Image 1 (cartoon, rainbow, N blue to C red):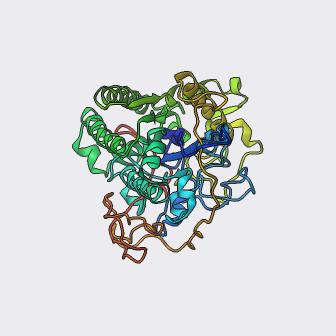
Image 2 (cartoon, one colour):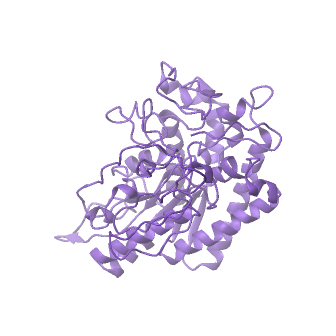
Image 3 (tube, one colour):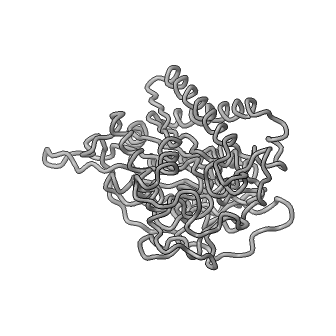
Length: 441
């Protein structure tokens, strides 16, 4: 589940932006601009544009409960947490970044940068061929900001970004597709305490970079109880949660909270908070009936022990999808996402970042959508880890496989850079004391 790490929220980078004026002395209707950074818990189709990615869900039964009933690139049966958060603010779900042209007016609105398999570390999940790591996503956000400057000017664009809430859901893949993998170097080189230190140093640099790009209000979503997702329960002797993996998540969350407090102290105007995803997901798992569910230990698609753990067209889907907390072996269902989004939104209201009447949310201009067509699928894996870079929107910078990005392109005709990439599909969680299933496509 690329994860509940994000679980949630993977969710939304909620940008509360001010791009509007008053008409006849009356303030314009305020609507939020929503940006989403994350992994497969919040990907809404970016990976569909990565031709070599093997982390895709653009087939049935994904999307069966989404509008139209067809797969969109969301790793669930319906909406992501970010989709639902957007609805609470009265705006459409932000489109995937790779579907946009930088010349579109839509760059003034919300954008989803999330990519299945993304991690905080650039090396996370490299065996999935192509991906957009958090560093890549930040670079693409920088391109969006530059495009905004070209349309509305530097001062207005800066006000939009300064007034934004960035909610970031990443980190679980750094465990399930990296540290807990016996064939990945980080799990061999570092103790867990050292790995936590590496992650915190990385987040420090990444959030500081976002701050210098104008971000001030950040909601960083903590890890969910990764040891309790269906794919991990089957690794235990009794079908219970893997407590050592849950312990890693708790330690990560505590360290992230301390880091955010430190950043608030040293960066003027910064307001960075940890969104508690662990508690709400554990609540759903331990007390499903309280929220209208019957099942929280296994997946609706009955793929807990399947290679990859995804809900393939051949899967035997449950009769009532609203009764299951988990859709596949890694990702929560549309019904569970509604509960999670409700808790996260309520936390934002209590913190004063938003009000229930949205009066703290600033306006954004209306835009007309002209998305790029999704490229046709083709066989993904070439020899080794060397593949072409992910397809990028015109005027976007190509992604190297090592997680770095090239400088901004002078024109759409610039040549993409080759390199080894990544993308991840739902992660497989395991630990050094548990046998890990094979990487899922």
